[in-house]
Length: 72
Image (tube, rainbow, N blue to C red; front, side, top):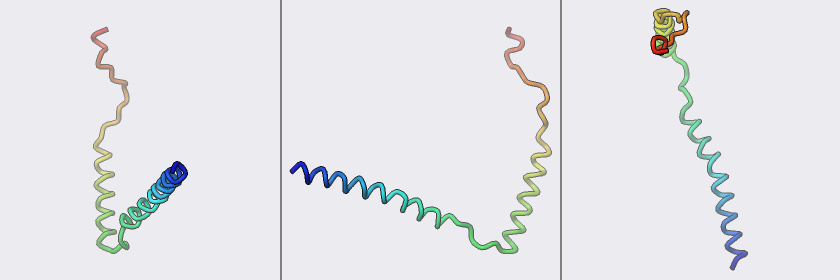
């Protein structure tokens, strides 16, 4: 009885360990991007340009800000 219980537990553990990588592999295949088309490339270029433009509007922090400066 104990031998079959140990064997069953081991079989379940092996099955669960083998199932996890298979599930991850299925998810990766579904998340792949479709082939690059001219329309997608244009959208990507526009997004990149907007991103760079937004980064330029962010001010550079030169001085370290201390909110507790007046409290000390």
